[in-house]
Length: 135
Image 1: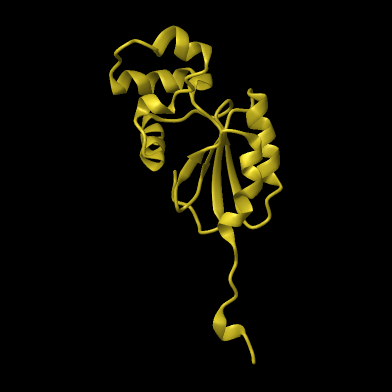
Image 2: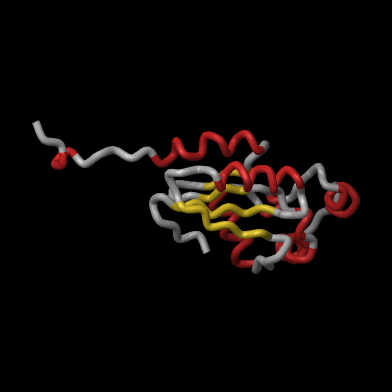
């Protein structure tokens, strides 16, 4: 799922969240890379994909939850749940996943605001090959 080309970004977002839709609009305007979007409201993630995502972000499964969501506050916070149970919950309760997430070949980042997507193009600066430069 996360095998990406040098100039590719996998963008996970939830189209049911207005902030995620705004972030998607910003990142779609970036020019230096290819956007490979995945709307989790319309597509299911597997336990393997969620585990890979946690690994790419270098966090635990519990850290993938949006701690501000009502679902987290009402059902997860303060409970001692096994990792497999947390994976099952994230598959079933898509709104509980902290999004949007930008994933590149170099790493992944949960975006805290849509304005963070504005600087995404800077990740992929193109340097001209030196042998193409004529003196």
